[in-house]
Image 1 (cartoon, helix red, strand yellow):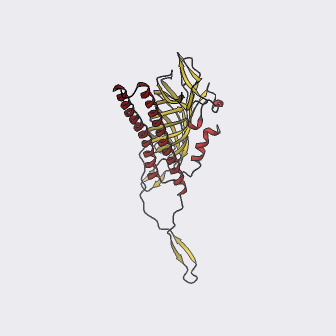
Image 2 (cartoon, rainbow, N blue to C red):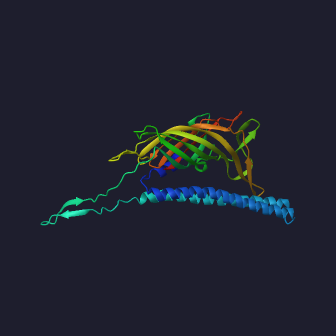
Length: 351
């Protein structure tokens, strides 16, 4: 469990008061870059495979040589993708750290009045500005981005979080979405209902040379006799519709024009759930055989349940929060071992 929350403690120990506009924009750009990296590498690998197939068809190389070249191309593509994504994740961490360290106090710039005889400071006059307070509409929209650690528990027992079957440090999740938030009561800013749509990508990496194998109606972990060059990973992609009740402690502003409401300017937390569908399942194996490295991609349902539902909660300050979600549905159906997906991470709701 300590490994599972290590990343979260580091990120959330920062001061949450940061420059909103530029910070939010760069976070969005990093999220887009992660998606583009995966798309670019997939396209480049496809082009390399096509070129190798053409050489095989034209008898320039043998089929065995072609398979070796394909394996090498896939391995290089995976290494480039991991390197580029790791760099983006490091940039995200550095960005948060930089915003925290640069949160210096502003210069006062006050006018001072001194005693004419003694020269001592008598009064400090702080210049005021006439500023019209603008409120927000009752319904607002947010772009959502979340990332963190992901794993599976057995038989709904949270005591199996760190059971050694999955490598927590490399098992991650990502979420990209859009939400609306509506103030429930016309004259109170406390309670909101939050709803929208999200794409979630959950990854788990079995440890100790294990991988998932489908045997009829059953899916389970099995130890592979082949020499793995890196841990296998199993990925599911889900489209979900989340709904939360959010408590926002931002105080309203009272002006001559009436009460003005704003959101996400203070502490807030939300509790709720989600329903959705599993859109894709994939397992990737990296192994060595007779000094040749191979990458094996397997796509299919693996007996994965198509319908997903669960619970979620978050708590934080302004746009950033600590986030957790739990899939109440079992990952695999049929006679498989009862695994449930659990995620904890950091979430941004860009208002």
